[in-house]
Structure formats: structure tokens, C-alpha cells
Image (cartoon, rainbow, N blue to C red):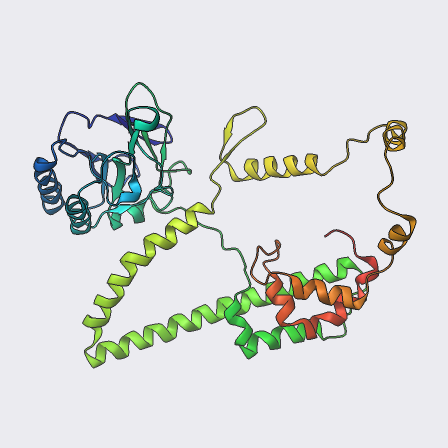
Length: 390
């Protein structure tokens, strides 16, 4: 038994006894799409008829397509634990029909088993149940994901497909994404990027405090963001002109063919990476699921504020606790720790930072500071004595 859910609606689809169940899904603000609940024949020699049926459904129905069910087959040996080996030919035929139908396995996690038989050392586990879609359906639901529920009375785990339709009345596939500025490594080799940075950091508006430094960093990020937008517009014009030239040369058909093949492979991969990095919701302190952006932001803010804020314990209790401990920091060590930062320490800290790891909210990673340190160091050094947490 499987379940597909959307905010405000859900339905259960039986696929255990029937070869397939076909449904046309439509509704208000919905672009219609096709759902197939599928069951692969339990007898290996008869399973080819199941693949023929799946192929016939693909040929006879056009449009966005979602297929989910117990296929009674795996695509590779990594989807099996215990028991005898699966037939390589049978697995190959399964992969072939998936390729023919152009079906994508859009689950984030593909390593969990969905079927179990036996106990102890004799246990056999396989990934027989899966949810697949074509490229058109994936474009409609780029945030859709598959999760497995806990084992119940069946030897199969229930499969849950969540379509993540957050905005009431919003059309499927039209979820607006906010653009977040992030410094790109490719910009380092562009002289215009360096000119923008130099114009901001080498002017007479010097940093005298950490707040001045933060303001200048933000100003630099905003300037680079606007420059990047202009670059993208210009790149779009160049790309349009290049396509026109290709059309004039008569090579456009071959180019389109190559572009289509690459897009069909890379777009689902990129979209999967994107959705893995997105937070759709979170449980609040009462255990209630929250999805509104401002509410989710506040939950994170309150959690970490509480985590890193002192509970203001009684000072006498602190002293009493410390009296029972031997000091680990000597007076000499403490004096060294209280000294001002030296230029060498700051330079070494910058050099040792990973260039591409998570940047701050301003979108500037360590790479920005390492690559343009000669332009930045003077202002950063002037603000050093008043550094406070940003």
C-alpha cells in the first residue's frame, strides 16, 4: 500500500494484487498528470510481460507521469542484502525498460531496503518498492521527495511521496525561489571583479571599527551582486546571438540534440542537489510542524539564541563549583590570550581557512579574502582592536 500526499489532500493506492492501477490526477490550479500504481510479476520468467505493460503505458499516454509500486526487481546488487544473487540479465532488462520509459528515480536516499524476509543470519532485504517519474513530472514537482515509513504488519515498508505544495493557490511548479548572493570562484580571474573590490576597499572611507568593516563587506557584496546581474544579462544576449549564428549555419539540429541529451541527465541531478539543501519546515517546541518562512526563521533564531545565551546562574554557585577544580590555564597563558592579535596571526588564520566552505550571510567565502587579501588587509587590520562578534 502506498500513499501520495499534498497539503489538504492524500490518497492511498493499492498495487499489491493488480498488475497496475492507472489514474488521471487533476484539480484546481493543478496541471493534470498521470499516476500509475505498478506491480511487477512475482514470477521471474513472467516479469517480461510486466515490462511490456509498462512500456505500453508509456507509448499510449503522453504528459507528466508518476509511477510507484512494488516492481519485484532491483537495478543492481547494491539494492540487495542476503540470499542468493539476482540474475544480471533480469536486472539489465529492468534498467532497459526504465531507460525506454525515461523514468527517473527521484528519491534522495536510494540505499534503504523496502522488503524484508527471514530473521537473523537468514534475513533477506531488497529495494523492491520505488517511485519513478518522467522529466515532465519532475519539472512540475522539483521539490517532491520519497520517504519510507516504519515497518508495519507487511513485509514491505510503506512509501510516502510528498509533493511539497506550500503556497495555497500557487500553481504547481511555480514556486518562487529567492536568489542568495554567493561569491563565485570564476570571478577571481575577471579583472572587472578585482576593479570593483579595489574601488571599494582602497578608497578613503577607512574602517575604524568592526561595524565599519561589516558595512564595507556588505557594500562590496552588493556591488558584486549587481555586477553579476549585469553579466548574466550580457551573457544571455551573447548566447542568443550564438544560437542565431548556429541556426544560420544549419547546425542547430545537431546542437539541440546534444543539448537535450545533456539537459535530461544533468537537470534532475542538479535539482536533486538543490532540494537536499532546502528546509521545507520544522517542528516547533510543541512538536507542531511549521512551514511558514517567517515562523521557521523565528524557530531557528530562538533555538540558537537560547543555546548561546547565558542562563545567568548565581555567581556564588559558579565560584563554589570552580573552587573544586584545578586551574588549567596558567597566569602566563592567560596574559598571552589577552594580548592583541598580531598581523602574523591574522594572516595565518586567513591562509588556513578552507576557501570554499560555507560563507557567512554576506555570501563571501574564505576564497574572497585569500584571493584579494592584498586589497583587504589594511582595512581589516585597522579594525582589529575593536573586533567583536559580527
